[in-house]
Image (cartoon, rainbow, N blue to C red; front, side, top):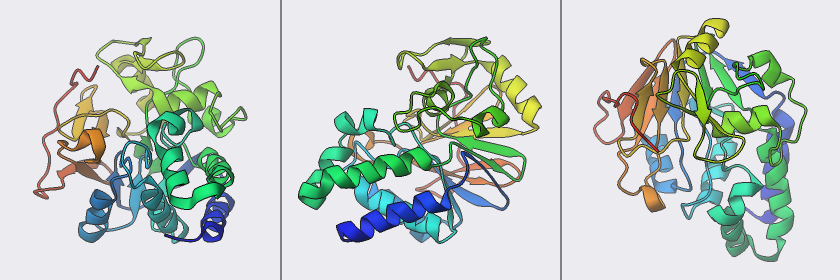
Length: 279
């Protein structure tokens, strides 16, 4: 493991490189869902699937190697080999109970508080949305909604100026926490206040407005490792097998002009269940 000084320097370089909450990229990417400290699966991805990578967030908590995971992911980002999005677990409201803060203190000792402050600033700087080849959009959780319950635009995401550390900014919070549902428009989320479930009508309106053919996300645990929603417009992938997810069949996706999901064990195209009841 790198020294405390090297770790702080790495985090500062990540913040310096990150300029926008929305990134637009071109190419063919290996998309990775929630990792949650699963360094073994991450290493397998590096060995068997080509860069560049598209990470959908949730690098830490629940698994016991979150520090190693996030360091490797950030190194790839600085090398230009990865797009790194923020997940809802890249947040102090999750890291206290989720395990990352405790892990940090166990591994680096008395300086963990000061180092964690650097992590909080770095997590807050990470992009929330990526647009790939102008055809596919990626985020961790879901489509955010305005107060009138219509979908937020990417331009509004770019202009976010509220608290991003926690985050309390409602648009940022929803991008990290919202989920698709079988409802037509929207419904309160069982995840708690501030989060929403969004339906097919919201997805269709959002995709038409931004001229994208698919949305890829993580966030929702599915034992099969993947799911589709709203007629295939949304694809969820889950990649961790750490801790409570040890029975998951992890998936990755190849993202270019479209999204193709693959089973990590067999390397075959995956059959993802449509609209599973995850709650």
